[in-house]
Image (cartoon, rainbow, N blue to C red; front, side, top):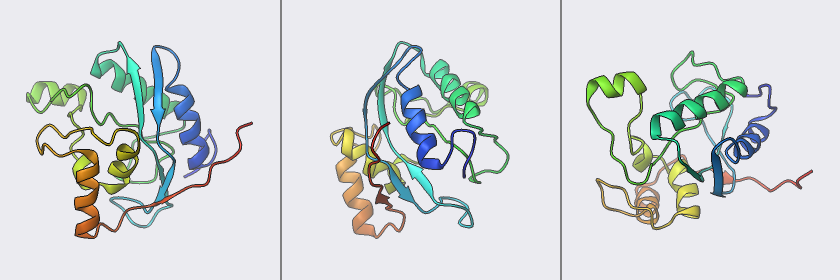
Length: 168
């Protein structure tokens, strides 16, 4: 879905630039991958990528910063899994596990590692590109192993790499 930052591809590219300023340092980023929508099928394709960043921000402050970037890109949280201009998630934060105290989860909405990471090849594919040895704290499998398992199981949401555009 296009927004103030342009097409989905342009929004992700700009978000990657935003992840390299104001207390955030972009360490690496995967290729951009175009995939069919997850959750609600009747909407435009999504553009996905995974980025590794360094920050001194604690997880909740990082999530707040990511939500501010989403809002700047025109994100409005109206329909679960509906069209959006940008969606930024924390997949992992130094292996920290946040599951659970209801008061904490209700306040922040933050669960770590991201609860859908192991079932979503459109996340695992880009993750395995930049961190192939990342290990899921509960499943004890690497990103590469999880990707192989989903491919073996016939996941239908793999996506295709997008061609790189020349940088202006």
